[in-house]
Length: 319
Image (cartoon, rainbow, N blue to C red):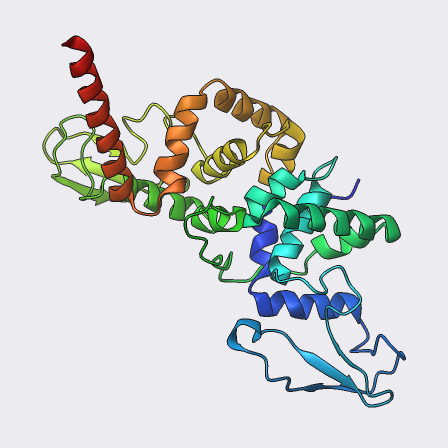
């Protein structure tokens, strides 16, 4: 079985939508642009008057047969409203998972409706039957871009996409900064004495650079100190992506799938799945708090409203 890159490595190599279309051109025409109608290489790009939404799409004209075509003509990407980057992510999920990603998973991970997810899975499976190396050619990307994972398209009032979550938790440093902002909206606070009189200190540990020193109780703590959920976790970035996968999959995530997407060993994948399966309510809370809501204050206001409503119900029952 082919060796597939991890999820974050693959998304970092995809880059922007323009990069994905250039990659599609290299995959289709390794020796240069070629007309799919007559096979002539005497083609050139023309201006088609496309709107701003389709500014990354290119139109070509064959000088031999006067045939107009695009890089998606005659492929599974033709006549769809989705970005090529979303298609490559779907191909990666279909190929890196043994039995292929289910339409319900594609629906949550990419942010499309169920009918579009079924159509994507059907087209990718048909391409895999025609060409055995189709997935391998699309997945083995040349290199990762220096900027890392490109930001995902905004997807408001819907379930977060896999690309957006991977961008938010792309690196360990970025993950710990996000965790610090959510846990301490008004600044770092000592978990022991609850005083904001702390200062940042230099840490010799590469994994945990967010080390603080309390000026009141003279104790050292990190962004995960005092938390029963994150204490002892060495890689928070992979942990949050695993949380998203478990909460977004209707029937859970098999260990093999978790192993390939995160790049961890089988034993670590099994331990992650067992931890999340035993804490469904807590898992839902962590997902909403750290992933589902972009603004921590909005989540805290919603939680306060729920607590107030529960208190009113208890008072009415007591009367």
